Each structure stands twice: as C-alpha cells, then as structure tokens.
Image 1 (tube, rainbow, N blue to C red):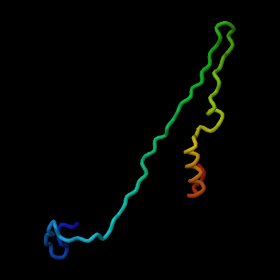
Image 2 (cartoon, rainbow, N blue to C red; image 1 turned 90 degrees about the horizontal axis):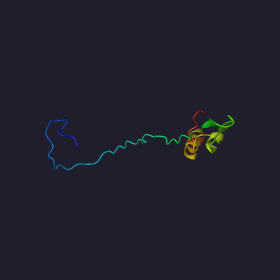
Image 3 (cartoon, rainbow, N blue to C red; image 1 turned 180 degrees about the horizontal axis):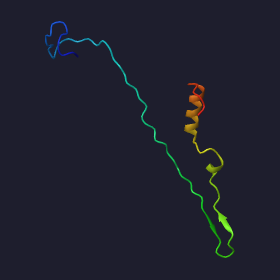
Length: 86
C-alpha cells in the first residue's frame, strides 16, 4: 500500500479503505542435491598361492548408475520440453 498520495503528497491513514489490484507469485524449485551411494570393489592376493581374488562387481556396475527418478526427469525433458540430449 502506498504511504502518500502521488498527486498531492498527502499521507494515507492506516485504516484507509483499500482495493486489491494485483497479486504476483514467485515460484522456484528448491535446489536439488543428488543422493549418491558409492560402491567399492576390492581385490587381494592369496597368501598361499599368490592368485588374485576380486570381489564381485555390484549390480549397478553392469547398468547405468542413474536411478529411476533421474531417468524420468531426462525423459520428461527430452519428450515434453524438447531439450537437446545431454
């Protein structure tokens, strides 16, 4: 609400009748922080026969590291917004 009249400079009373002439929204998406799980794979040598032994690879190592939500976002951006492929 303005404090003074632009035409004459007179001050408005705090209880003056007022009319809503506009509303404006500001909308923002909160910052995203990825959730990352690091899988480690180790190897060692047998002390008896010196053969290398490797831990099995986790399932994520044989597929994409991206989860279903990031896939959905990429598909949405690609199909609906028609963004270029990354």
